[in-house]
Length: 215
Image 1 (cartoon, helix red, strand yellow):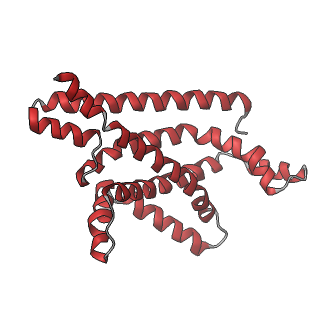
Image 2 (cartoon, one colour):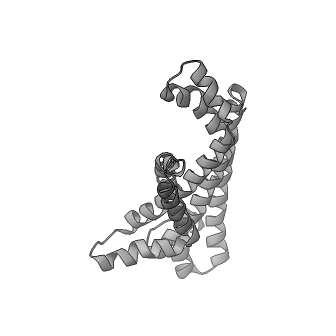
Image 3 (cartoon, helix red, strand yellow):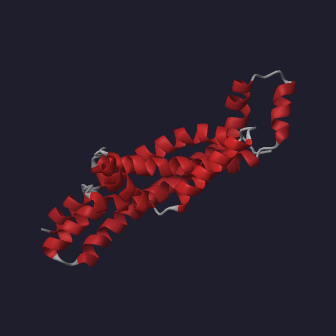
């Protein structure tokens, strides 16, 4: 019986990891164009970016999740729990990633761009071969922290019916009680995934550090 219960709860890890990694990937990609808005020479564009980031990060994740799932339906658009979860966490990830990138860019001196120009490197080659690797080295620990944060925030999707770890632990608690064991087991799985993400991040960061340095 105990193994069946643990197996049932553990199956929820599929949605937990899937939603987390997909939202993180979307956030990492969308954070780049948002960074361009943050570094725009037009004050209006920079102001719009700052407003977007403050609004997204200033409202609790659970509230955004309810707005996306319940609120949008009032506009005639019905989203599935998975779609609403993905949309919400991806939006949050994009805002946080953009700020992470902006902080990383501030760690790279202007002289790096000037040196690349002196070598007659184009903007694309400069970003790809010089700025990009240094930026990644500077922000990789923060990205890992953000992904772990997304992993923990993904537990909120159970409130709208996604059968993740927390949802399944809740179901087992209703049937068998002993919530401390059900949710404790789910918590251990979250902890395991968090440790794996942190270890992977340290490994990648160490490799990049051996090749590049932020000047």
